[in-house]
Picture 1 (cartoon, rainbow, N blue to C red):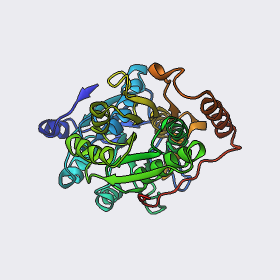
Picture 2: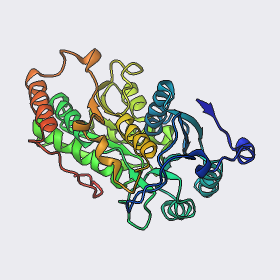
Picture 3: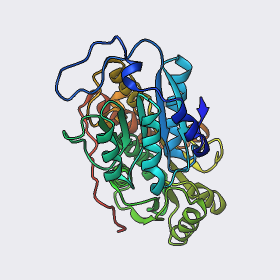
Picture 4: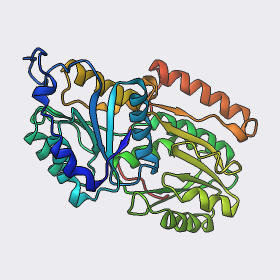
Length: 345
């Protein structure tokens, strides 16, 4: 992996490699909706653009999957982190001009501008985290999101079995579909084992502000919450300090909070990225909703091992988790996807 910073973009331009040359000798596809040509043998050039540090939980899963693809020899990978929304379009264009085959990122704050860039570079494949579905007028712009509602629901079953106060706090970044659906799934799981639970829901207006998340969590604990849904960094710190429990999101932080984090809904970006790599190499990349590759039956999410809480969760709850997980995987049980903003009750 090569870390590309903002200062090195000018060097990228000097090393420009147009996609037509990179795919020389490959047969052009004529099927409608497909972009580009089958790529020549060798690793794809992949660039990622992140608005937060790569350590941030959501982005870290994309970064992890990209590095795994590098280790396999499937891609060459560069990235920019902490890219502001105001600068996002420029960075997208520079990576496209530099001849990258696939550009990955998250455009929740620059939806229209990102699609305009894609329109200007029709031979480049764009796979972007987005709140909107793909459109036919942007055939090279596929979208994804972490649809890990299956794992979030299972973590809720465990939380419901562990609460003593029947009062839980949920702290999220922004009330957008990506966050809303996971909170709703978690609450649905809680109601399986603790149907009378009260939920305190709050959003901090940031994707990465641990102090603010921690402060918000403290307020919920003061309001009676004995379990916190940690959609953002900082929440588990508050739980640890106050001696209450937490449920993790996207990554497993139990190693850092062994007496606090009971369970976590994990996101695995590998199925999403691997599908995109295969489609670009075949010349069949098109505007698709890659969110489905985050579903549990696709291997895109899972419930983290209980670890230090093994044997501490009621057995009946774990039996229900096992039953529901099997049903989710075979398609006989479907966790509802609810993108509406959740409210406290």
